[in-house]
Length: 158
Image (tube, rainbow, N blue to C red; front, side, top):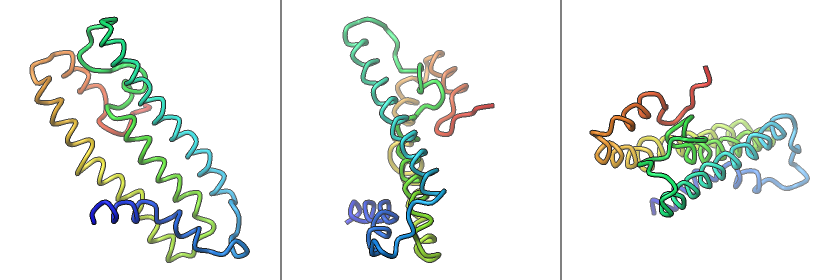
């Protein structure tokens, strides 16, 4: 039940657009084009983060490095770049659908990225991984420095 609720709420903007007859849809418009660009960027961000971690793990298993945790590439900008990409993908879906939806459907659709963000950053994903890392690396000076300089979720660009 919980998973069905998660999927339904998260994908609501897509369901809402697809429930509107094609002849009544307004087309992408500016928000749709911006959202599409953001979606592509977000997808690539998540894929690159996942790939960087995969390569890091493969190199570690081959003893090409002895790093205890990944802190390079996108992982130097945020401790959870893959989750950031995921949240931004769903935010992009909302932006893409914006010009097609009625005000009521827009309001309901806003719950999608908010729910995804809260789920990933407050319930599953980030809190679980942060707790594991804190336990595993509590006495590791390098990790503590990484944690101090690298934001948990939102990168700092200033």
